[in-house]
Length: 429
Image (spheres, one colour):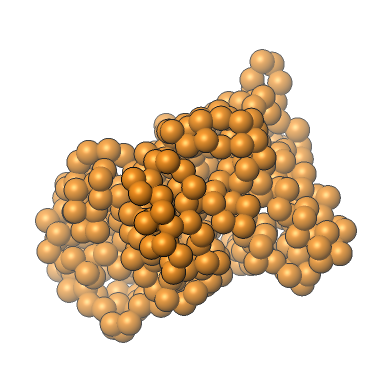
């Protein structure tokens, strides 16, 4: 996608900026962009910060992105709408359940439905409940790392970052071990609904089949758990009430599936990015050992510096002016979260990783009522992972100097593979 000249008066010299922007190429599929999108982001912020191209308004500056995220004049319905359009274009008609799934998710609903779902689901996803999972997370991470430390080597994505969030959610939902590999495979297929532009007919068919199997499984699983009396995420979703009403059985099954869709691959990317940053800046990370507050701050800085969720979209529901930008009803907006988090007018020395950075909050998990559903769980898992890693291990070394970045998603950024050598500290089995 070749970017065209911006038309807004916020650009100091629109004519000059238009000439400069004419040769900027914004193509998330380009291998060069996947390898390093930040030079393109920098040019967007400097030369074309408010840019319309092919029916989409692209925003890359922190204040502009935050202004749209804060505003109630934008809808999150673009993904469901795009799924319908893409399925129709491919002449795939069996998308009804997938559409209900998207429309029943707090991620893609607007008020008043969003408020009802958010207040119900948040009861299950409270800080208290998620932090109560810390012993489970610690034990799972310790076992995963110990299993590979004996060999002195690990492929952090496939061995740790990918299975960890699946196992944590399965532990929380009391899913039996033998069902977990199948759930991971089906969740990956359904996750493509968040990138509908990348889907072909075969991926629609696989996603529809996976969606049917997942909702069937979690519907039956929820019924079994209700009889068992176990304190699980499923039970808390069932017990949640707002204005005397709860979630329907299908909504509970959908909420379970969305927990995996929203909370696994983003966490996988974040853990991969944390490890990559550790290998780049071993001195900064060594200073964190034993300091929980510093570790939490470091997770936030890694999220800002190498944002796992690079983009999100909105749809204007009315004519409005946000942050000085005139936007028309029906206009699509692409918010470049990864670009906003490197805005040098907001973050001093923005391209540098500074683990003790203070100042404005990043927008790596979105902002406000449509912030990422899995953000809290992802943060807690990442903090626990880094704490266990730094407390128990040392001598971290990158095996392959050339990083490869995942290519399964336009919106996610994280290593596809990351081999490292490391050793247990004395006294660690």
